[in-house]
Image 1 (tube, rainbow, N blue to C red):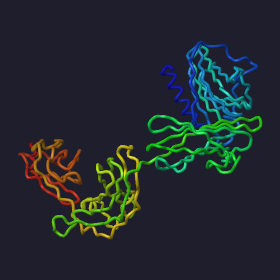
Image 2 (cartoon, one colour; image 1 turned 90 degrees about the horizontal axis):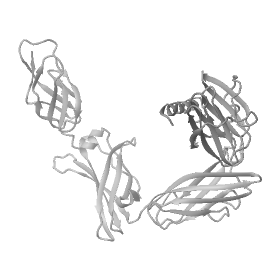
Image 3 (tube, rainbow, N blue to C red; image 1 turned 135 degrees about the vertical axis):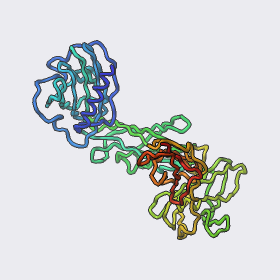
Image 4 (tube, one colour; image 1 turned 45 degrees about the horizontal axis):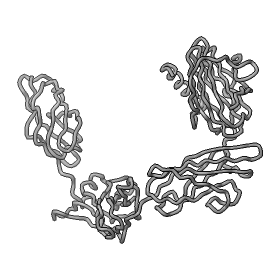
Length: 489
């Protein structure tokens, strides 16, 4: 598609969405452009009619699914797309046409042009029109949409709304399981009110995508014996036995025939098969640590037993949160087991300074505690219940160290400011303010050991070089640079 056409097509879809005419749930497949064919005759197909004011599109019920697509055709050429029609249904079409003399048509799988009813058209611009019409239950199969351009380039954006609103619902239970534990795949076709389509005949299946890249086909039955509910209730189920750990996806597809009506739908779902090889053992033991004996806790540790049955690389992770559920720190412990069946003690630790930085006293909660296996894509092997700590006051813990400046560079600049200087030291990451001669400097990128500032100007030009101090302020203290900055006249 030429770039100008692509731009107009994209704009057209935006207009349809903005007018509430659908941002499609699925898109039509694109056809090839070719030499222009004669427009549809006056007895068949969708034709341009006399423009009149009307609601667009006409009489669309609410909450209908939509298939969206767009076409562009150069002068004297045509372009086509195909839309799958998988059940008998009234179709409401909403269209945005650009090109005053452009024409378009809809044809069924046999090539027969479809007659539309309730056609309406409203001008948006001089050569752009919002249009709509209704197709009465075209046959199941591929619907071909064709755009014909005359003397000028043409664009067409459309949304097709299917009146029956039926869709496939699919799920896998349990969502999380282990290798060797059977999962149940369930699918059902429901209407807009989620009433299951039952009766008649049906055929359902699921294509399971295994983590190793292979696929497996599972037949789904409505016999009341495969996790599908009651016999003949329209719910289909099947059992699947995973053998590998990983993330699985399943495409569930089904067709039902009720009287003369045939309905086909698909839906994607997923599930996780977690690996084995490790588990938690025993209770969590909480211990505050005063490493340097100064009466303040340097860290808070959590120890727990862990049993291994396989030689793998494991990580234990837990989120430490405050009373409002905000994460203070994510605690980790890693271990590569090479001893087969064995037990180890896991130690998760948080620095006292991190607790003080968070500014909320305990109790805190160690939550989302899990064992993961690196070789299984980080999938969870085992989980542990939340653990709530004792009550703590932040004054019981070591505070973060006060900042320290080692050097500044350069050490001089013009009196009217703007000089960028670097500050080297420690504890600089949490700097809130830097004062140069008592005036606040602009802060630039910074980390714990270096940062940049922009020197502020003096109020007036000095008659001689002027020395000023550089003071740095953090929540944990302040410091003055050992070298002064010199303003030059």
